[in-house]
Amino acid sequence: MAAPGGVLNCEDFSLFQEVLKVMRTIDDRIVHSLNTTVPTASFSGKVDATQTCKELYESLMEAHLSRDKAIKSCIKETSAVVSQLREERAKDSDNLSVIKQLRKEQTKLKLMQSELNVEEVVNDRSLKVFNERCRIHYTPPKIK
Image (spheres, rainbow, N blue to C red):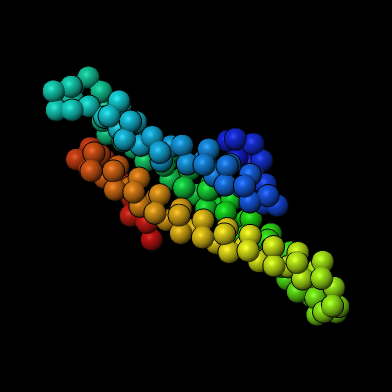
């Protein structure tokens, strides 16, 4: 899965987190973006706040969706590896290298699943800040 900072690497959790960090830049800078693009009441005539808020919202949603897909893709990939290793362990329960690799992959899978929770918090925070500044200028469509 391609990401702004490169290719999302599901095998190395540290690289996986690093790419997610880069992908979360828009959320990390939401306050700055809103402060520099959405006008205060005294400057409201100079900038189209509705269009600006709409574009920012669409960028946020696109970023949230791409990260969600990336995380779920890696979870799926790692789950497949865990399943394969479980089958190998079932065939040869004395093979320590398979057991060790299985534990490693299971841990990585749990960490990736926890990234979904982190993602939810990041998304909620960004949308809260967005709604505080843009609610009078733009109302996002209802998500079904």
